[in-house]
Length: 489
Image 1: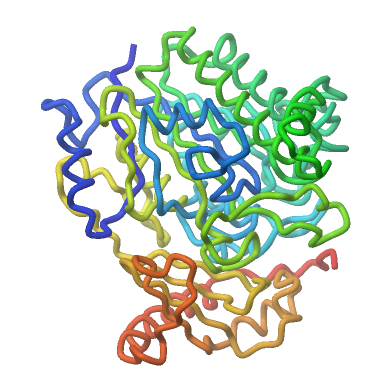
Image 2 (image 1 turned 135 degrees about the horizontal axis):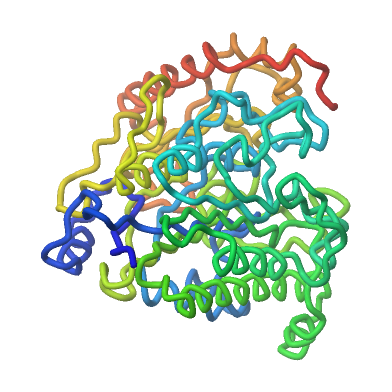
């Protein structure tokens, strides 16, 4: 059995008391490097469009999420956890590579048969861990290419997953009885049940009979829930109707989150049954904020909540990029720790690789940072502040940067049509010449809802952060690819 190593994905935010509680709770002989002969297993669980306020442990008063609430009670609940982008495909690309997704040309969600994709020369955390001796598995939503299960573009196995059971985008025709899964290149046909349970079944089956028991594993579970088109078990829907949730769409959404929570519970039970729980780190999160109700015709069940945050999916205000984050390390932290430090999906690659004893290639910029030093009470050396760019962002700002409690937002000097879709060659070329404008500044330590723009009162701080933002934006502009093939409009 592998000895567990702790994993946390945080940056310093001046929360020394939380640092102390984490470090004091670790065993006295724990260190930063993997112990000889024992490396951690990694289970990363990613939801789709789950809002910051959608779980009971994040304050939702109606949605029942007992398994995730228990995970938070036994582990660590992150208050400042971020996705790599405010929309699905870029968020996934950023998590897998540790890089801002615009650097590799994943500018937006990827329609079926689209030219945009995660390029073959990008190195993912799965590839690095697999080269380092890990068995790797992807189950659920892939959404890192348009030409899915075709030789024209890289597939999950090309990006490091030795086993994959995936869909290009959403479950079709809905979460109920999906018919668009592919298992290692072969269509799986119509499957019985709801997507999150189908995905959990496959993940559990892989753990039981298909993985190499002599290797540590990296299992990446990507639920489709609660992305539209939503379908939920009638019994769960009825339970919410009986509890007073009379809108059918709202009851369907709430039941959808509860069904996903049950799938998480099944995954944890499987780890216990297979004697893997004590050697497996679990990280649960979402790819972006919640979908806006009725933004498009099929979104009538999208009753997700950003909690106290401004904006939702597709926004660079907090509601679009701040997401739930729960970490669980058996025996390494005190139960119920609430961590107010900054977390990002782009930190996953450098951190997992360091804990696994795997080198990260230095041929290209990595925007995430390893947080391993935190376990010996030392600060994380983040050379690049966390930043986001999304040309199709709603709400105004297209660029965001966080530095400590400060968050800078910026627009650009181009019309809205350039960002939708940015992957069109002419739009990408114009974006390469754009400049950031219309800066906003918020102190998130006292203005979580981003109601009070401080840019006019703190021009010096805006100038400093604005210069750094412009430097990072220029890096993207210089290296981001132009997809020359005609893109789907």
